[in-house]
Length: 327
Image (cartoon, rainbow, N blue to C red):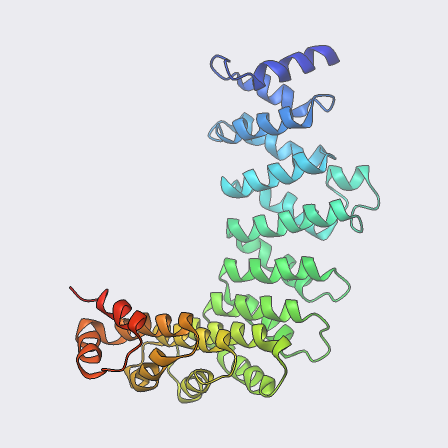
């Protein structure tokens, strides 16, 4: 029997094969003695046949029974891409380590093992891509659990942002505001997720956090960039938000200036045109070029022509960039 399964696997992986045979693919997928590459190939082909309930059932069975990490991670990704919503609860079992999945039954140390970590992260990312609200509470429980590895919590924050549900706003804000939270990376992911959610409730906490970062050393610059980008995604021209973005235009860190220029395009307030024109002379070329794009976004071709006609001292490359925006 084992040799027959190996033969089926080899036959399926041949490039000169005839029409795909669903039953052969399922047998290869379930054959633990077959090479893992052939089983992965069978899973990929079954996913292409996801309109057939037998194919979906075979892929879901991997979540329940499989202990091979590479195959399991591959199937998790396939289920997410195909948006097989019947996979949501088995994926939740995996991320919460409920003991129901095959990989947990095979390895009692699953939750602490590196392979287990990678599988759980893949499942968290899959839930974010699938967009099913049933994942919100489990993801929030991982996000808020400081005993979990920070990599899991990072993935949970990003998936909550992808899900786009307002329930996640307060837990994400709590991460941003928690002075006892040891992971700066997690705060950055929570800030990014808040920007993705686009909920105005996040604005004041983000502004407070940016104010709290003023004067801190360069190792916090990326965090400040994330805050500025998130404020931009919220799209508010509320006075304090606009003031923060305009101040960031003059930050000594070019990455923060660049984020501010790009965020002002998203806010879309024409009162920012004058300070943005000053950025055409920025010492960082990327910032200056981004300023051209934002100015075009705010004022269109008329503004670009006006700048070209009235500013004689523009750097040559900026003049060329401006000219590319008008016929």
